[in-house]
Image (cartoon, rainbow, N blue to C red; front, side, top):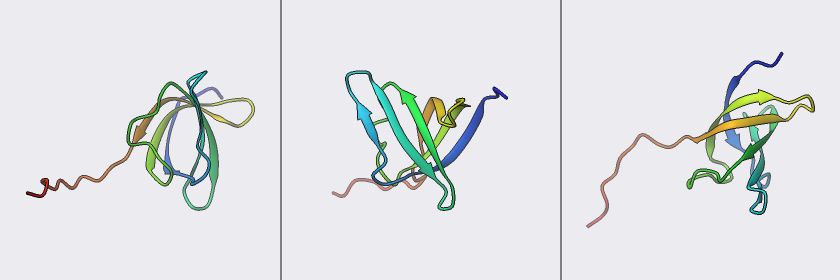
Length: 84
C-alpha cells in the first residue's frame, strides 16, 4: 500500500551518506532492534547527526527503502540559559 507513514528512531552511527551534488541524504534509523534505510532529498536540519533522535514522514518504496518527505530532529525540551 502507498500510505504515508511517520516513523521515529535514532540515526544509526556510521550510516549517514550525504551527496552535496544531488542534495540527497541516505541514512539508517534504528530503535535498537530493527533498522530502516531512509532516503531524503534536500539539506538535513542543522542539528542532524549520528545518534540523534529523528522523526521521518514519507512512504516505503518498492525496494524497501523509506522515502522521506519530511525530516525532523528530536531535541531536549530542557532550556538552560547561557553561562555568564
